[in-house]
Length: 293
View (tube, rainbow, N blue to C red):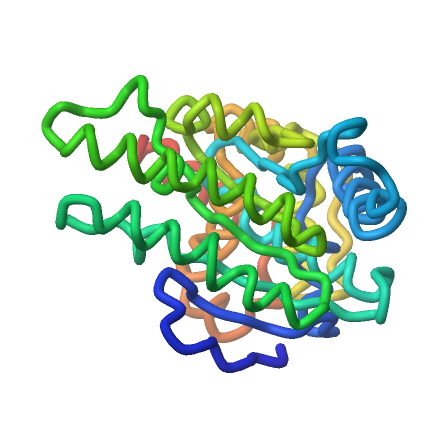
């Protein structure tokens, strides 16, 4: 990754990078989700950074906002960065800037400061980066921490400040959408009910990334096993049987890859030579997960 220096006073920004990068191809290729999700994401990005520029914002209201929602561990954040890398070679100029926002770097205990920090981000920092003239993809990870559902704001916090901060996100999103048509936001959330409805209403595309089904589980397990032994060739029926067990345990994509690690460390000989790992070892590790549950 070609990391770039963050601009001065860029509170709330976690990183800024120039894409594409070959090292990021795995972030797209090895995240196993419904192929339709990937196709729609790339198609929207292609349209957004291409033909969309010639259309009226009134006749075709596009906010430049994609939302990926679903349970933890399903690959939403990795998929978002992978999408940016996929779009980079096909946008004008063949590269783009990828910006990650830290949602926890903006809220403040000081009355009104969260609102001011969010406003500075959307009204000054992001437009300054967009003014460089490059396409920009902005990752809003865990967006429920930034665009809090005002209808469910806890009275134990400062509800006035929560409302104001969310208001600032909404107005800031509108401002960037109008003034910086080269900026695409990709937001992720594990808890879509915690995101303000007005934020979701601005989304041009909302995709649910759910727990993997049997076929996806088998593909994820096989991909992880191939990481350690490229020649690994399991019996398809046995692999499907293990996949059934994983689905029954409601394992997410991250949990599936961790299952392989758990199987690996159950015995010293496997830890020393991961290529010896078998589906029987995975079944035994899955039994451990079952007992823990």
